[in-house]
Image (cartoon, rainbow, N blue to C red):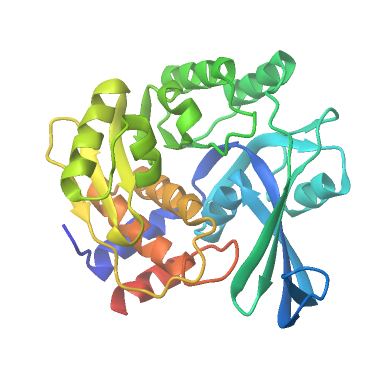
Length: 322
């Protein structure tokens, strides 16, 4: 299935509105310093960036929530920030902050990117990767236990929030409540995400997981089948960059969904868009092929923008006509 009618897309996307989805994962602040380069520094062989403006936006799990909100859903972030001005900015810029815990023992994660002439010059990360305490694990579990929601997205950036103990509690709660779980994983925690509904590693992560290259279709198919036997997931979506995505389902042949040719400016946050659109589409009655097709379109929209970006329903439908 390589195409969806506009009528079918409309039927799925009109159901995005007001869907309540919890987003559990590493929350961060993305800071952008925009400028221009006209000379090389006399101090070292590096460009001198003359700053023209600065901007802030939600990053990591925050970008997943921002994507959901842009599509009309009601995201609730469940994460950590530090007791600092960056954390304050996040609290003031999320739609629902009830699930955000202030941890006095760590600073808010900040990624600063310097952009000049549509190119990223350098990225500077401020972060501590220590695991959360059992007390914070319990607070998060209690929040999920009492909250009502339709789906859970787990956004793993491997910064210490998603401990094995927390994941065990969270997945048990979702199983008991019969709530679907959608995961954008990192390799270190990969086998802890079980049972889930959808998991979306990229082809580089797959290569690390199965210990062989994952570039060609046959390599991807072999990797997908191996992963499907190792973890309990209804669907596996392998993100393959410009080659699109490959979808695996138990007892079915894999389906390759090619990407549409678009100019790529910045891949920052494209995975956040994919998991947000996949989750919303499945919760709104789409098949896994339809959900992946829409996620592929949405990813094509955001990679055409510079910086941490989101795609609107209008942009997704417009991209179908490009």
